[in-house]
Image (cartoon, rainbow over all chains, first blue to last red; front, side, top):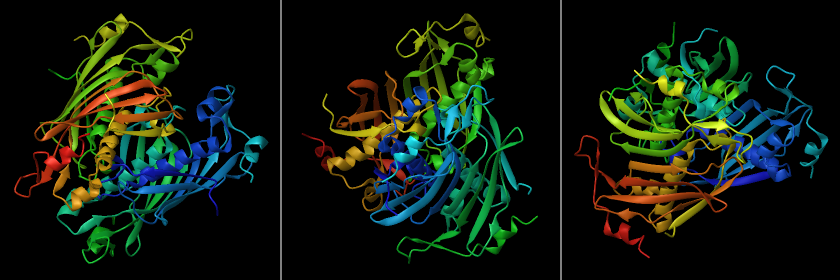
Length: 140
Length: 140
Length: 140
Length: 140
């Protein structure tokens, strides 16, 4: 599968653990931020404008899977690739892959829910159908 | 299922995101640390002694699954429950649950590999059969 | 000086770096969270109620000093002690000390500004005189 | 003063707190990583080679000062500028500045100690005079 969005990152000293390799949860941070940047790359406004100016509360993570195949360490440059979301009604799934010099280090998938503000609910937010114009941004 | 080990934690301001809730990867940090503390609670020496004095390099994460069901926010007290490992030959799986006032916020599972130092390999480490006396520590 | 608030914490594997010791910025996280917890301990409502129900936006950090004297590593239990704030007009300074078995590992000081919501300003917030009843909570 | 090394960074969602701005300790992470990258930029080998192949244990932080002047939020691009170290005998001080669109957000200084492995000491490490050829890398 071809990535819709990718970003390179240099592994920081502070992300690595006493075994000298990336502490696994830091890879989850990387995937999560890729989703934010991919939505903006696709043409949506910055997440803070989505929150402040549109009615969109966000797209919280509801399901996560990841396989850790090969370690990375500080000073390594990795590329984080993310696939276009596969949309369902009010949710979508994004596949991510983290590679170092062509070697697959991590692959994962995030399922997220499209969420809008709704003052009539106890939490102030509710899930909503992903708008058509959002879906269209990822068509190629 | 009854947890083998549990730990309470107060959600910190710095773990929460601009939506005011725990940034999902921080829950993965919590599970990961629970595994470290559960091994020590079961009777194994501190991880740094395992690394320095025994031949054990660690038990790196190879597979992760998590479902995010209910949010938590700063000032909340959560309990992180972890099940005794389900052992295979050189790997094991640990189920984790994070609750707030009885409500299940997150459930997840980590698959990890028992790893020992081996200077004869390129990486200096290799997977190994989980020792019998380690398995026995989790029998009840 | 006697601490007004203290909290013990077990150093997590994920906070330590490839040198095997706490990555220094993690100590700053610890001090920062101590301030949040000390305000609640003193009798102020949880920070999220201060934000939602009172007019208080927070008390952002404006100045930080820290000395790193002795390292700590995963599995260590540290105690984080914080002094009562020394109040000026709209700011205050809090001294923190992190100890391990009586040994001083880190000492630091945070200067913070009392900040309230004010829709008439460009940022929506402004500094304000620390209320008398807040100051009184820390008198002994 | 002119920076010796600078790096741009996009502020991540997960680095921001419920007030919607960068959680202050994350700025300390940024400065700390800039030091690592500046040493490599100056011509020293990657930190992991310094540790594995040379006798250098690292350059742990002993003193930190920072002023937080203006906030940054997710989606912002910041530039982190670092000055050439000012060397003393076995220590050095690095000034850092974090800017957003020309506005100074944070300025700080780190004092660090040059540290080498020494199996004859209890900790296995000791401070050492910064080598001449390291100092020379930062002359202009």
